[in-house]
Image 1 (cartoon, one colour):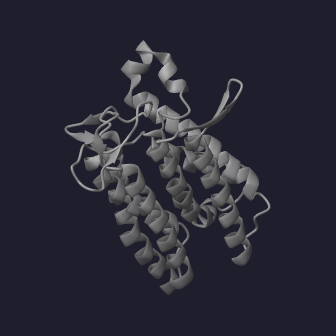
Image 2 (cartoon, rainbow, N blue to C red; image 1 turned 90 degrees about the vertical axis):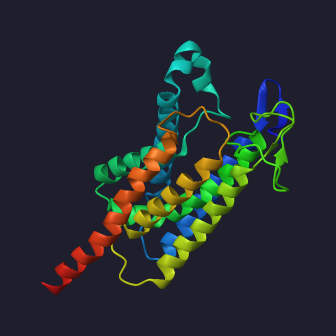
Length: 257
C-alpha cells in the first residue's frame, strides 16, 4: 500500500524489494544456524544460497513470461518490472534446478541440502508476501468482508475497491509452514533424505491451489478455469503425495534386507 519508501535521485527504494531482501537475509541466517546445530557443513552455504536465489529469480521471471507471452511481445517492458511479474512456482522450480546443478558440480548431497534449506524458503516467502501486499500485486477478489482492504491510487491493485488481502493470507500460511517444517525436523526420527523438501512441496501445493480461487489478478494464464499455478500445484502435489507413500516403504525394505 506504500510501495515507494524513499528516493535518492533516480533510485527508489520499494517496500516490496525491502521485504524480499529481509526474507532472503532471514532465511540465510536461520539456515546457517540450523545447519551448525545439526552438524552439517555450511562452508558452501553462502554460494549455494546465492545460486538458489539467482536461479529462483530467473525461473520466476521465465514462468511469468510464458504465462503472458502475448502481452510481453506487445510490450517487452512488462518483463523488466522489479515490483511485479514474478511467479512463485517458477522461483521454486528454478531454485531447485539451480541448487541441484550446484550440488552436482561440488559433489554435495542435494537432498540433504534441500532438507536444510527448504523450511527457510517458506520463511522468505512469508516476508515476500508482505512485500506483495505493500505493492498491491497478487491481490484478491472483491469482497464485502471486514477483512477486505482498499488499496490507494498508484498500487498494482485496483484502487477504491474492497479486496480480499490474499497476500497476507499467503504470508500467514508461509510462516505457519515454516514452523511446521521446523517441528517436523525436530520431532520426527528416521526422516529419509528429501522428506522435508517433499512435505514442503506437498503442503505448498495444497495451500496455493486453494488460495488461487480467491485471487483477483486473473492475468496469469490457465486452462479450463484453473490458473497456471493451480495446474502446477495439482501435478506437484500428486507427485509429492505419491513419494511420501512410496519412499518410506522403500526405505523400510532396504533396512530389512
